[in-house]
Length: 38
Image (cartoon, rainbow, N blue to C red; front, side, top):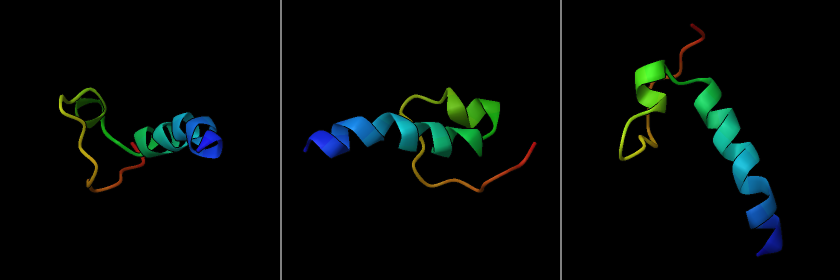
């Protein structure tokens, strides 16, 4: 459980790194998306 709490922010960071700006600020967050390198 502690490991999940420690690695959640890192996972969120990695997922957000491959999203467009609109996908990154979408509410609710999009879990499935087409990755981009823009």
